[in-house]
Image (cartoon, rainbow, N blue to C red):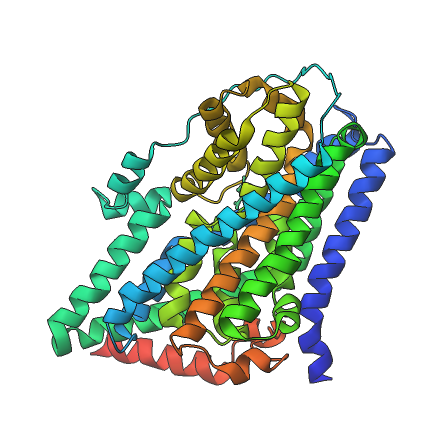
Length: 451
Ligand code: ASP
């Protein structure tokens, strides 16, 4: 019975997703989403919108305190502070390497298939590019002028920097700071409990998010852009199932099939929110509790990856570049494509994992290689769906690199990784408050008052 209950969250989330797709399709294809209509007003943009947004807010609410406290605990619990530099170096190298491979593969596949050739579609959706921040500024901004401000804005790199600095300073202060570290440890545990509570309602939220997204998708556009969509989705799958799994197997020796099964939940969250950042709490929980990666590694590699690692996004950029170059009959040549690879990898460092950011990066790439930025208008209509799929690939890359780095540092519990049930969320347990605990807490509070 217990087993069955434990199973139910993953199953429920997948069911929510399937049901969301079905309901969304019925609304979309049945023409029920006409503007001003009851379904569009009250269901899609009413109920689904509200439930979905509330859930995304709830996830985002957890990100900053979770990253902050778990990084402090990670740094203090590392045991050997030199490891910090090694973990950072390895993670950075692997993140950049996988992103470069991702986009190179995508360009190779798209160029070989010649997508977009002979298509003389004129773009009607106007797209005006926004700039991604220049690299120099990205480096400057790693150091926050005001850490509270960075936290308020959810700027991940400066938060990571500040939290590591707090951790290192606590170590320098030594035993006097022990109470603070213990407090951070408790705060971290509290945040993890919050993740469990939010995840317990995920099936319903996932349903709402996906039903709304599918209901609003320009599905008719899918057919006219079939070449682009198929090559993009194909390249994303090649990267997820072949490249990333090879990286996992070669660098860590761990089983790809276990990885793929356990990562499913994270992928569904990424797919429904289209944001690696909002998925951080779920990625972090899965990597540490289901894969057995020690918090000293996961607390750093996961938020770091959500910010700088975007394999799926890079793949989209590769495929879109080839597609639009072909549509506009521009020959980019080897040098042009190498620039695209370099620009995409660099752009991914400075842009956060939020919905639609890939398009901003793409406009930066286009400007660099001299492709018309308004060409992006051609792929705009299908981008929401593509964003959902590529975000699922982005977070899978974060988890692979976290696992590989942890393995190389001996900071992974292999028995947890290999145990299919490890860290499985029992929703009843996650949300049940024991009456003994309630009484104990009440007593503690009263005792403090009467002091
Ligand atoms: N939505 C993606 C992410 O959060 C970024 C993008 O491709 O737009 O990872």
